[in-house]
Length: 84
Image (cartoon, rainbow, N blue to C red; front, side, top):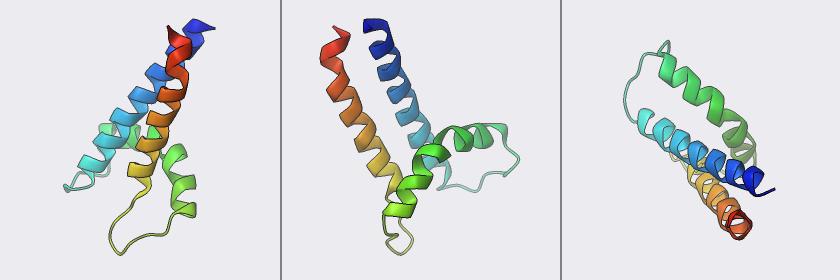
């Protein structure tokens, strides 16, 4: 059980990094055929798409990456006592 919890925590951290990379890449003009962009988009879209349906969009700001990161940190925080 401990190894499974650690794997989930590592997955959460990897998703946080992917979401940050996606957010940073949205600030710049990147070729849509860029392989890194498509990989990051494929990894993060299943997490961000449901949040976009729930959260209202504030003009040009998309709050779903920030909410997703907070939720992932909450998952890590809840699971960390079981990973000891």
